[in-house]
Length: 102
Image (cartoon, rainbow, N blue to C red):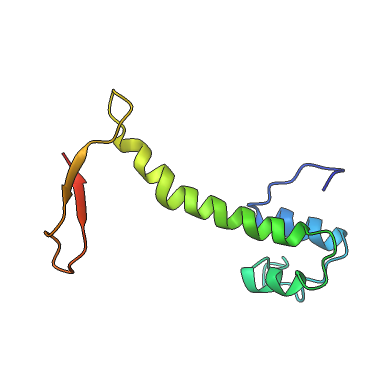
């Protein structure tokens, strides 16, 4: 995508760019857009000699982890830059550890 800037979080922009690069994304959906679902991209990794498709898949993994775990904790940071809470070693009914805000 060196010739133009795209938002790879946008299915429409990503599918259009991949199609222009010659990747076969299959059929268009009802909205007239090629799907960029994980399964479709994984199938393309076998024929992608550039490594681009794998980088897109890796990016999706990292952004999912960041939004699920890292970003969720940012709102709990105290003025001292730390997250304070209570660690309960035997309190959860499942036998797991539990943690809650102090």
